[in-house]
Length: 115
Length: 115
Image 1 (cartoon, helix red, strand yellow):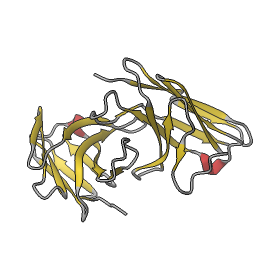
Image 2 (tube, helix red, strand yellow):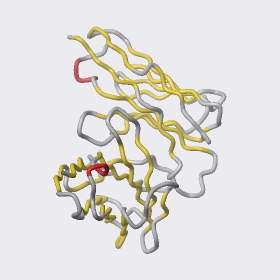
Image 3 (cartoon, one colour):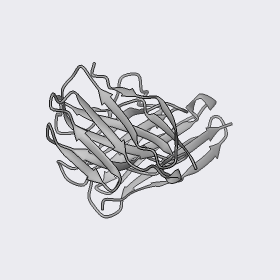
């Protein structure tokens, strides 16, 4: 089945630094990938839709200059949290689908802790 | 906007018991998905439902797409300790727009199984 790989699984960084999270579709091409954020004991919140070769579409309230998304190829999307602050600490999850009508498959998530 | 009401929020059951959880909405959905999430990991797809009335099984799991397209349930039979986790329903709304960015998640059902 479709596999989505996310890296790193955990990252701790200092306030003010930037962190890059990668999302790869391992056995299929994904023209569209999605980035979610999940707070403890809560559901997933869509942050942005990553489109290969074009600009990402951000959900209302998500700062595009803070959460930079790049979808440079059909198998890779990256989310960069710029100038991270402790309130950015969260669980970030990417997802992708392998065909138009297939359901989303999720990566294993990245636990970001900003100290 | 579209919202999903998932219930119950949490369940504490004895090993071997059957489990039932459901999601309802005032809006119509084209697709219902059920995911399981374990701590520190991304959601894993359990069952996908594409047609009203559809009943689909995956091992001990059974899910149905409600006839009205506004609800879905997930049953787990003969629960075992490894069933513990958070189960999310997700619906794909009518405003599809060629993407699944508007996949709407329920708030999850936390399942605890006592051996």
